Length: 621
Image 1 (cartoon, rainbow, N blue to C red):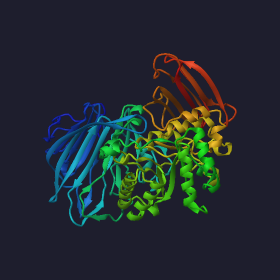
Image 2 (image 1 turned 30 degrees about the vertical axis):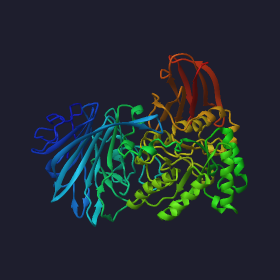
Image 3 (image 1 turned 180 degrees about the vertical axis):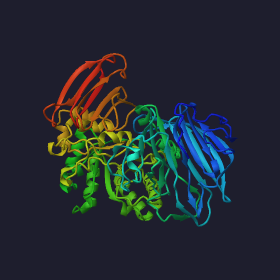
Image 4 (image 1 turned 120 degrees about the vertical axis):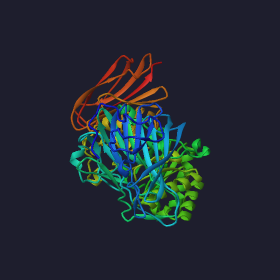
């Protein structure tokens, strides 16, 4: 179908508001007698329209009356039948959600408020349903089929058609390990190239992030733009499909919409589209976000003889956790030393996380026995690494692992993992996952360097859909590779992770002029604001509040510039500002200053290429 041309007009004139179905002979859909279902967000600003125009099932999205998605396919091929073709809309049931739950990330709580339509459909004698769910921050759509013995899922070519001519997009190539670089492109440059999700775009004046949610038991999806700009999905991890006797629930095809970057980074739509946890798990006191020391990036495999020393460094920094990473199993007395480390750490108020290879966690009985052994020792969290190719079997494994870990009160960090799809709402013991090209990539012993602008893009792409284990902040001069100390310090504030595993050596933190800020940086926040001047691919600036303290951070890209930070987000009164700005002469030092400021003031920040800024604001006594 053609793209909409009336950019400033209402998207759905002539459609029957919240009516269940209506004839849309004069709607922009364009085909006489097409049945449509319109769903509007609780605030009345976001709309989705599901249509069976000419038998082709499609959906559209608008915000403030302006189109975000032109007709976009909603499809699935099952048992040789393309469910998006020859489709006919039938009865509609209406529903809504309205709840609030604790959230670990950019803010203290998530609000799940949406309007839903459950739409009956038929095609070629097959009966199925579509769900259309519209919230104030975007839209999710999906298909569902009842259980049937031996049903074969063959393909899924659902997609997104952005309502803009060759829009700017921030994208990553398809990579099953989700550790590729993000770049700024135009959609026209990418025709025919398989891309990973999430993707962020600018449509009109709106920020749009597309991805998927609730993927358990369903293969991971990539997208490929065609010459017209339509982004078509591909179940690349399951090229031959799979059989199932269970009900088939397509993952939500998600379109997040925001009027500004602050709205974008505060979305919880991906999480909201997942089922809530059990009441006991929702309030579990053993699920505790925190910061962690970690030796892999600093020294490689852990040494058996210095585990108490690492616990001591962790305690001196005031961090909650210490991660014993890959290599502990090669110690002379691995289990005895591990048990001794756990006992000593507990005596020092430090919790121990342990690394494990996913191959030890595949067979259910072995997985449960190993997790039970960890828990019995007093270990509090598991970093599970190297999951398999994200086909339908492995996407189910993520949920099964989380369930088994929760049964033994273990928190989880997935590494080498598929992108987040909101599973952490159902299983809040999932504190983080990698699925990001982070500081493990930029390390001299691997002779790898991240592009300068990558760090300025991922806060508005990868981090929109969930927390990421970037392992930030190193200070060794040889490891900076162009970054300044202030850039590295800002990473710890911008790259949110409820399990915040620091990449640098604790000795360099304790000796650093910013040690007081390093000790104070939290793992989660109560409020987040994106600073004016932020632009993916150029600069990322955030102000995050925890309690009555504000943490301000800026990461700059490849060109030097200056930034003025308006302090109007502060409350009344005087505030003590401790700031760490770039030094013009060297990357491995700061311009450290302390002064009093007020909300009617500002901070002038000079930024070198690959530079940054970090500030800590507290009410004056």
